Image: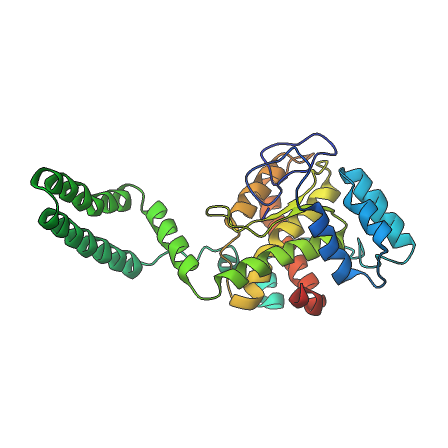
Length: 305
């Protein structure tokens, strides 16, 4: 999904970390998110009282305090249990170790091809022409003429978009194709499950978890605000890339990473100190490798989640 927002939020307020919108109210699905985490990751069950107490918490600090307390009691042994260490990772090293093509991971190879665009144009042309003739034949003369004119203009609009902004047209066709492709639902679930699992293992509490479609975005997992420190950014960057890596492990490429990358870029720039372009590129590759390692290590839990 998922400083995955345009600016820093006030401490303690939940934010929509893997979508482009933020929220300042208590999330509706905090209880669902915590119950999902507790049932899948704990080595010993929480009592109903503990679940009720956790479910009533409304701030990042209260969640962290509660989770750390439960961990000290041996009930959340996997919470904040995975250590990370940042280092420079080259694109060739990432591909060698993980077998992931970085461009395929971030969706650069998934743009619609020339053949796809041509086929789409032919479909639009023949469909609009047929509908225009049909409208002229069955509607009253004045209305039929007007309707035929509007319907016939669809192909002209298509050509206009393709001529002025081919990248936009390609992105639209790619998105339509991905939605129609078999396995889209499973892709969304794996994307969000990867965000959720990695966030838990790195000690970032989930503010909200809601598997719903949000326009062009596949994202639905929310984290609380981060403080902008390098340690927090390191964790958030891994959580961000985890969604795409989770898709890649199953399908060989990722489709739901654009929003995550855009928002991650913003937090990199707003970090203290801000990351330079080469640092951003290296950090992104490192985060992808780290997410890959975590998801492979906890593959059984990931598949169950």
